[in-house]
Length: 149
Ligand SMILES: [Zn+2]
Image 1: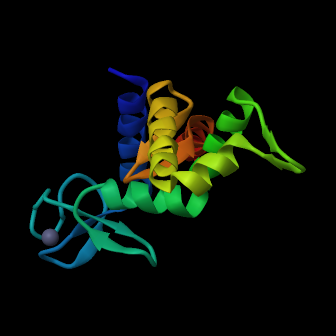
Image 2: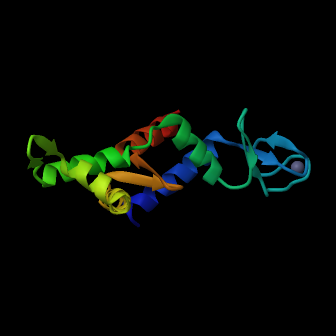
């Protein structure tokens, strides 16, 4: 199992813990593994003042978007370019590599931003969920906090 999969599994477990079981047939929050009224175990997830849905993806998405900040992929890629390549001086003007690529080839720049995010996620520094990228450390801290609650 990769680190990202392990994080996903832990998020799933935490989401089950923080969300209530909700019986759709009886339309109420229930305790335990079976609905005491209809005996169903086909529960939806209920989050107070957020909503009711099947599955845990939406609970996880809610947790991550409300509790954590996404990383700034553009800024990270700009820093990478400016560390790797020298500034360019033309006459009295000085241009940074990130500025040059962004101005002259914005499509290439955007692809670079995305590739950099993906490679940092593959390297275990970032965690991707629904197209958003978070610092893995932040996600782990949040999981630990919720597991301890
Ligand atoms: Zn029921």
